[in-house]
Amino acid sequence: MGTGHLTIDLDALAANWRALDAMGSAETGAVVKADGYGLGVAPVARTLHKAGARRFFVAVAEEGAALRQALGPNVDVCVFGGHMPGDSEMIGDLGLVPMLNSLEQVLRHFEALPGHPFGIQLDTGMNRLGMEMSEWAAVAEIALQQKPVLVMSHLACADEPDHEMNTRQLAEFHRMTDGIKVPRSLAATGGILLGQEYQFDLTRPGIGLYGGRPFEEARPVVTLELPVIQVRDVEPGESVGYGNSWIAERRTRLATVAAGYADGITRHLSNRASLWHGDAPCPIRGRVSMDLICADITDLPETPDSLALLNGRQGVDDIADIAGTIGYEVLTQLGPRYTRRHPSA
Ligand SMILES: *Cc1c(COP(=O)(O)O)cnc(C)c1O
Image (cartoon, rainbow, N blue to C red; front, side):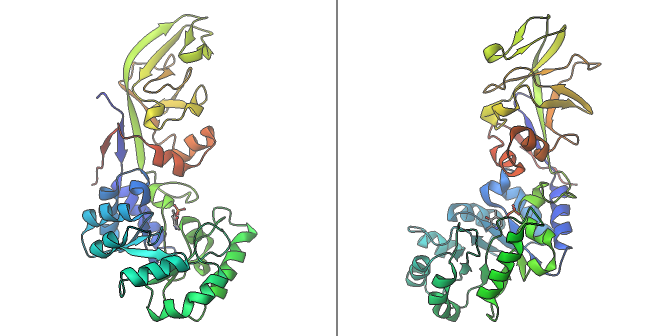
């Protein structure tokens, strides 16, 4: 193999959806934006559909088109970005459900696609997307007459269970939606874990499905194996890679693997993370370059054919911690050059 091999465990994905689904009585949707968090929207969505998901969420209408192609007509495809200018035809033809987030979008939707399903997105304090109380108050009556399929909002701090923002947003969501006869949704992965009072009628898990924090009990979904292209020995005093950022202190055996920052393996891992041969860590020596990484295999008993960046010993959140980012970003940066495999029992 000349490229890295990204293996996506669809059984683990389905198990994670079922585990989150079992945490309450709400319907459990699935967020598959950004190509299923980088793992391939078609196999991911089909697996989640088979597990029982019937309502899917994407960020933009174009992603909804890809999802509709993968799943066919009998699922709900909701678009967080709402009804954007120029999207009416796609929304109408493909039966996408825009989550309208402003008065402007509400008017656009009612004018362009009267009678077409839609949802409403409210802002309960995150100040990112959705109508605030004053705007909602002005539009609620006409919007509710048209029977939205969902009213939703999003939590800013749900990955921190003790953050006071959670109860504040919960109270605001109640204030904005109590008494209306429309299904409600507030919780993504973090919100599901906060408990049933956050779950309302429908939940929208994303990262937890893909094995990331804050769903600590998630089964890991992704493994990434990088082929060794060349092995060499360097003497004490010799340097490795761009900028001579690592100098050997002992006779060192190095393996050069075929992946780099062009594949989403950030340069911040230079001299800081390890690749793995089974349970044995092989520290990255020198800088991660565009297509190549050097790792220290001096202590291995044999010369490996490949080394893992993501395996049972090192997950997306471990890499994220080292790189100073979050698992979401590690997943969605996984590059297009990998050979992707989606085995399922
Ligand atoms: C991305 C997103 C989700 C999923 O969030 P996770 O933290 O990945 O579970 C849910 N709702 C909205 C509005 C989102 O943007």
